[in-house]
Structure formats: structure tokens, C-alpha cells
Length: 229
Image (cartoon, rainbow, N blue to C red):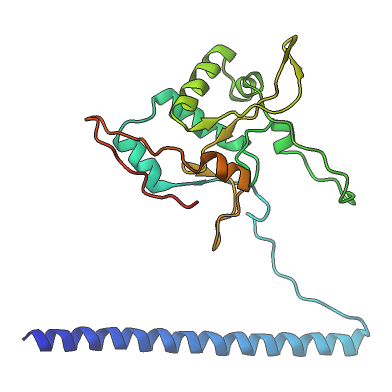
């Protein structure tokens, strides 16, 4: 009985494999015929007009549109252990719109959605402005006091980081050290993730050892499911 069952399973698997193979070969033939037809049409147009013609495809509506990716299993763990407050969850949801591509730095709205100038020179580069707590409060439509409270709480929980930079700047009439707020990419990431993580190496180094001391409601240590750097 066991051998018969194994035989049936193997037969079904082989049948599925053969079906997929036939489908792939069929698609390959269709693509080849389409390429031959396109080439033939373009050659005929060239003979008729004496000009080179090209066939383009319609633009992907999502092409160039910025978006973030959430680490589902990591977020699920944080949900299970009730790691984030409602205010912190609301902050993280809203702040996604202002993350810098490949660094996860929170930047100002005008730099995030600045349109690239045509014929811009490669060396003509302007560093996007890192958002201060005041900038972030304004972008989210909240008071600075409440925003600061939530952000510092997320900093203690290793969801946010604000390393101090070199030099001095003037902020609210005070001379202070510049700071950059960065969101932990183990929770959400504003960078492509095809084949490998195309994230700024400095950002990865800053968060490499984060969230390693998580505990559930009973004080039991839990491990972040997805660590990709």
C-alpha cells in the first residue's frame, strides 16, 4: 500500500513537471514568433519610409514611484509581543513616506519629492536635508513635544537611531550638533531587495546588532525571524 502511494505521488509530480515544461516550451515558441513578426514589420517600415522605427511598450504606472517594503515576519513578532504602542505604530506608518532611498534616513518632504531637473549635470549633486524632530512634527501634523516623545521611545526600543554628525548647525536659535534619524531596516526598508539587499552599508552597520534582546510579555527571550545582514 505504501509503495503504491509513493508511486502515485511520484507519478503526479512527474505529470506536473511535464505540464510545466510543455507550458514553458509553448511560451518560448510564442515569444520567438512575436520577435520574428516585430522584426519583419520594422524591416518593412524601413523599406517604405527609409527611416529606422522602434516599437515601445506602455509605461509601467509604478515605474519610478517610491515605495517601502515591510518585513512581515519581524512585524508579526513585534505584534505578538506587543512591542509597539498605538502612537508608535501610527508614527511608523506615517513616516514611511519620507524615507530616503537606500539609506532609510528620514528626510524633509521637499527633498523627498523633488523632481529631477532635465539635463542635470552628474556632478551637480545636492544632499537631501535630514529631517529634524521639528521638521518631522510639521510633516506629520503633530506637535513637536508629542513627536519627540514618540521618537525617543522608538529610539530606546532600537526602532529609530539618530547618530550625531560632525560640525555645528543653528536650530531653533540654538547651536547644536547635526543629527540624522534613521528607521531600522529590519522593520521596514526603502531599498530594492532583488537577489541581495541594496541598502547603504553604513545603515546596515548601524543596525546590524539591533533588536537582539527582545522579550515577550512573560520575559522570555524571542528572536527576530528575519535578519538579512
